[in-house]
Image (tube, rainbow, N blue to C red):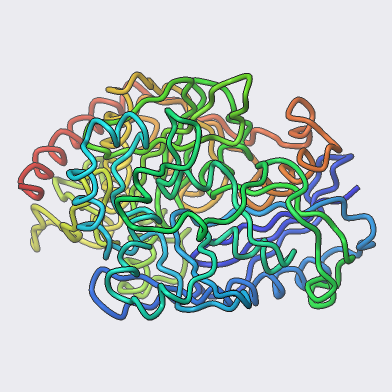
Amino acid sequence: MYFIGYDIGSSSVKAALLDADSGRCMASAASPSREMPIQVPHAGWAEQDPESWWQEVINATALLRQQAAFDPAAVGGIGIAYQMHGLVCVDKAQQVLRPSVIWCDSRAVDTGNKAFAALGEQYCLEHLLNSPGNFTASKLRWIYENEPHIYERIHKIMLPGDFIAMKLTGEACTTISGLSEGTFWDFAAGSVSKKLLDYYQIDEGLLSAVVPTFGVQGRLTAAAAAVLQLKEGTPVTYRAGDQPNNAFSLNVLQPGEAATTAGTSGVVYAVHDQHAADPQSRVNTFVHVSNDAQQLRNGVLMCLNGTGIANSWLKNILGSTDYVAMNSEAATAPPGADGLLIYPFGNGAERILANKRTGAAARHLDFNRHGRAHLLRAVQEGIVFGLYYGMEIMSAMGLHIHRVRAGNANMFLSPLFREVFANTTDAVIELYNTDGAQGAARGAAVGAGYMNTSNVFHGMECLAVIEPQAALQEQYRDAYGRWLAGLAALTT
C-alpha cells in the first residue's frame, strides 16, 4: 500500500510517495525548482497566493509519477504538513479573497500585544498558553480592522494546510492542533476560546469544522483526482503544521523528546505533558499530534525566523555557487569567527525577542581581519546562538534538552552547523533519512488505520550521531557569551 505526503512550505511544496509495507520512500519531489516568491507590499508584511501552493502540489505530484510508476488505486491515503500560522480567507464559493498572510508577516504584532494586555496576561497564559501575538487570530482581527470589505465576504478562514485539504476534498475543516496554533484554542476549557473571539469580534462561524489529526478528513473529489491523476475518493487521513509534523516524522511523540529543523526558519520543538507557558510568550505551546483523551501531549516550540533564509541571503550576495562550498570555506575560519558576531533577525518579528523587529546585525566586523570565511562561519554560529537562546527559555519551563532528532536536510547538511549546534547546546544530534513530506505520508498511513505509531517508522534510519566535544565546547560557549552580551545591546 502506498501513501502520499505533501509538505506545503513557503519556499516550495515537497511530496513523497511511501511504500508503507517496506517503509521505503519510493519517490520524492519538490516544486518549484527555485524558491516560491513572497510578496512584501509593505515593510514587515509577507504574503503568498494560496492558489500557487495548489499549483505546486499538482506539479510535485507529476514529478512523483515521473520517478515511480504506481497504481493510483494502491494509494491508501494522503497526508498534509504545512507552514504554520498563516491566514487564508475564502468566500462561499471557496474562492480566495486575498493573498495569505503567512507565518513571518509582522503586521498583527501590535494587535496581539493589545489583546494580551486587554484580556489579561494571566488569562492568556493559563488558557491560550500564549500571547495572541502575531498568530492567525490576530491576523484575522487585522483584516477586520483594516480590510472590512474583505472581512464581510469571508465564509471560512483556514490555515495553509486546511486550504490544500479543501482543494483536495472540497470540504473546509481544521484540527484542534491547528486551532491551537492560531491561538483560537482554550486549553483549560478544552474548546474554542470564546473570550478571545468575543474580544476580537470574530464570528465563530468563520472557523472550519474540526476533524481528527489522524483519520478520514475528506475524500479526493473528481476534479482534484483528475488534475493530480489520482483516484477519486482517496481519503485525506492526516494533517499537521510543519513543526508538529517534523516532530512526528522523527518519532518525537513522548515527553522529553525533541526535534529540530533548520530550513527557512529554525525550530526546536519538544514534547511536554503539562500546560506550560513562557511568561513573555517568547516560545509557544500548541497541541501536539500525539495528544488524545488518554494522554496530554503538547508541543513547545521556539522559532528563529532568520535561519536558512540568512544563509541563502549570504549565498546570493556573495555570488557563491553552492552551499557545500560555503560550508567548507566557513570551516577554515576559527570557532568564534575571530570575534565577528552575526544576529540573524532579518526576517520579521522574532518571537524569542518578544516579537521585536530588530533587523539583522553584525558586531565587531573588522575590515583588516575578517574575510569571507569569517562571515560565512559567523552566520552559521549566529543562527545556532539564536536557537540556543530559545532553548534556554524552554529550559526555564522545565524542558531540559540533551538529545535532539533532525532530518538530514537544510542547514543540518553542514558539518560545521552540526558541530556548532552540538557544542553550543550540549545536545547530542541524531540525523535521520526523513523529511516533512515523508512524515506526512507516514501520518497518512496511521490515519488510514493501515499502521500505528509503533510500526509506522520502520525503514527510517539514523544516519549519524553527533556528540559534543569537550575541546570545542568552551570555545563555542565563550563565543555565545559574547553574542549574548551583544544581544542585550541590540534589543534595548
